[in-house]
Length: 52
Image 1 (tube, rainbow, N blue to C red):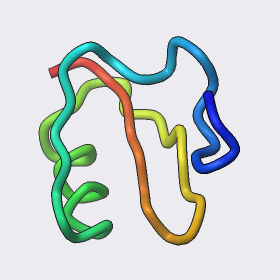
Image 2: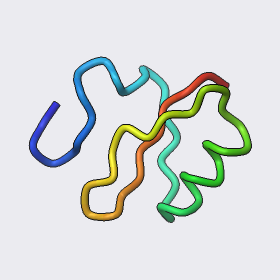
Image 3: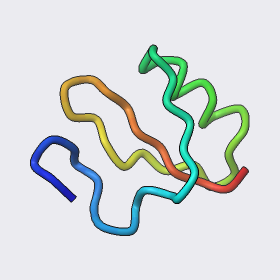
Image 4: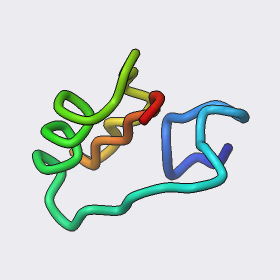
């Protein structure tokens, strides 16, 4: 992708949720996604991917 995030090409889904709180992203991934995987943690901004 870009130098601004640590995700690789293909890690970001066509549909995303963008919570304002990084810990809310972690909570949503743990509670709503199957096979959740952390794809970014640059500057404390957590990015997860998985199946809903």
